[in-house]
Length: 372
Image (tube, rainbow, N blue to C red; front, side, top):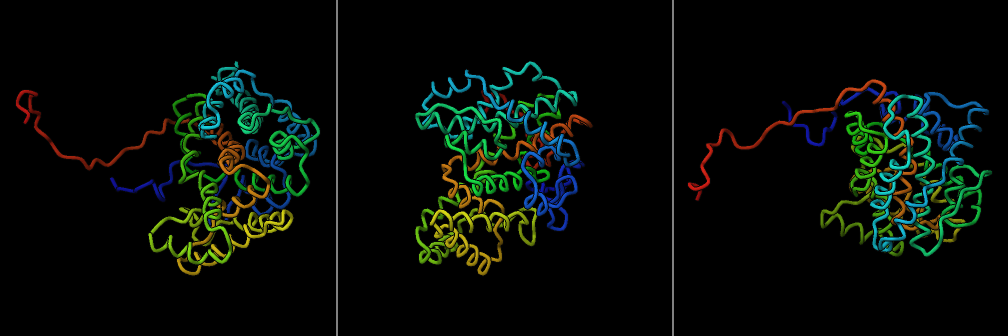
């Protein structure tokens, strides 16, 4: 056996959901640039689950079904109110709530295709309500029901803030959701597929994926990018701050990628959106500092920004609490997780890799009384 740490470069399965080939990301064969520029998040969800873009009738029906399924059982929000929510990690709260959802779904244990799509739709719809409901409850407010005439991104912002968002905010969130919707066999997606390969249920698979995304080396990077920008404070402090990180051999979040060699193709879209939003809010320093950090890291270390780097200033400009950045990642990525779970069920084989043993050889057993 070869020792490939982190399974780097190992092909673990086949998939038609998304691909990364020669630094080009596609969903079901569609270039990410086209989807980010022209598609709604609802179109992308439909594409990932059905292998094709919807026509107008299909999209209208699908979008209406998403809104119709956004309501969350009162018991879940009541539980949130019962524990010390101010001290709870939002990803831990999300993980718990999604697991609870399975208790209220009569089809929870179904793995057949039609039932799977119904479960996937309910999960996709309700995760938005869980994240926004959590945010409101910890702020001393009640969760808000969605509006039938708003799309997914607009409803998320409405349920979060209690007022209908501006078009630029909806466009920004929609683009971010599209860009994060799937990313081949990343850590959380692999976790979901390993889980359901045992023929466990959708809710277990999504809960496991959320647990993997919670880690700072996966979904938590954008939150840590914003923490870094806050620490830097002003544009003229960028060079000294980043140099100190270099000198201390500390990792700079939001740069580099295990798969991409010539840069993350998603980053440019969020870079442009960050520029627009910070200009509108009058807080251009967040974009200016981000650009300055990018230039220094790229110049001195040859590393390029990934999707997490500029998403931090985008979400901040939308007025979103920094510890909600990763839950919003989950709101998007569940589209891909669901697609991969359905694909796994359709042609399942238990995922059971081997490990190369590197421990001691043939030790002699010594009775307890004779051990020193």
